[in-house]
Length: 77
Image (tube, rainbow, N blue to C red):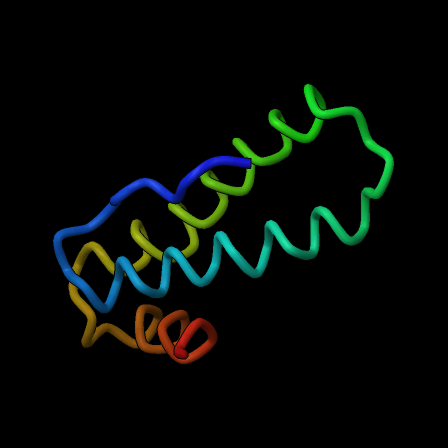
């Protein structure tokens, strides 16, 4: 599938982003067994974009915002 890119200088946000990607990717693989690799690559790209939006963009105004706190709570280790 590939490595998870660095999307934030904030380690808390980056770790939440990585967890989002890994969890979503695991579900994607589990739910799409037998799907050709080229299609999985496109779906993986969608995972990166989805998690960027869900975690990085949500938290870009600060980790103390309510919406960011909710996302960080979802993807806490």
